[in-house]
Image (tube, rainbow over all chains, first blue to last red; front, side):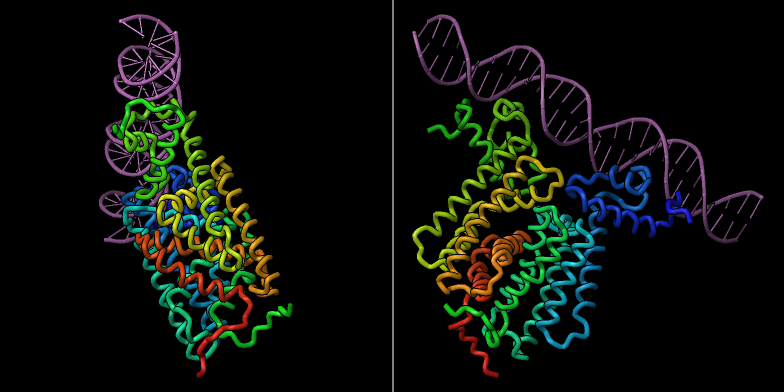
Length: 210
Length: 210
DNA sequence: ATGCTAAGATAGTAATCAGTTACTATCTTA
DNA sequence: TAAGATAGTAACTGATTACTATCTTAGCAT
């Protein structure tokens, strides 16, 4: 069981490359990831990368596809089979956080990509990812309104924006602190406030009696 | 009135440099800002920059100081003289958004700096900025609880995290869309949900009667 | 006017980057 | 088992980077 066979079929090698980039992004600024550092991480010479990718931009495109695919699959699986729309949204939220905690490089990559002014292929993919994410959210929000779980006066778009923004903010804060675990522990507490902001306002017990 | 005098006193030149970087970051990836591009933007040769800054890192440090100073001043001024803690928080929120909309380079710079793994001087400054920001929020949250505007069962830390996260998410979305104006128009709608999440739950009219 | 000095211009440097080239090793299959 | 296809290596190239050494001048005090 050699863990580092010299020769790999092209598709395997491409997969290894993408995973290497995701791993590297977990410990360093994505814009500082060079083809040389990627190659070193996967124990291959720098030139070998260009046997499998026409250029570096295409490596980033492949990375973003990997991310988008996995993330959407995770949140879809998390929400699957849950009756309550609000509970489904919570499951989406938590699974998203879990995914990011497992791959700390992912938010770095996404934030980095969104910085770009020019519309790179990778940026395109992030944009459609968020678009699809919002579609899913909108559906749950509609259902939630219909079922009476969510406030009927709720601003759908704003609610979706805030959902994603909440995650982004949470992730950003833990990147800042350099503490991935904080993200996990803060997630339920922060979602509780978001939840309170969108749900129908019956059943709250504020306990404020002053 | 020559707008481009050849020689400037050192402090003026440093100020011009910082402003140039902020402007450049408004239209391009901060990590792609080179000393040459900064110099070109301010109509000076590249080498001239190093008469006023020992190295590039120190330019970024100066930029971050500029940002931190201005942003804190703006949100403090916005909240000044407002009785209601909740209203003060709303004013902080809106002035922050306004500041970012005026300087689209600022979030790019901050996000970019937070990406860094190594603790650069500039990153340090962002960290203390957010720390001070949170202090101010905590104060308003405490006051809000005391005055009965905010839910007494509110999780202070989570509320502060979400406040900042909400802004970050909002800004990120508009960076993504490449539309700064969207940020301005979405801000009140998104804040409304956040507000609902933290305030005491009397007086809501959901209108949900199904 | 004159001389001094801070600010800028000019023209470099070494390091690093993505991408290329000529060649070699390994796998596959007829 | 020979031959073609695939994957990898080593060394390189031109472009770009932050930074520097040396020369020039603008603008000020006297």
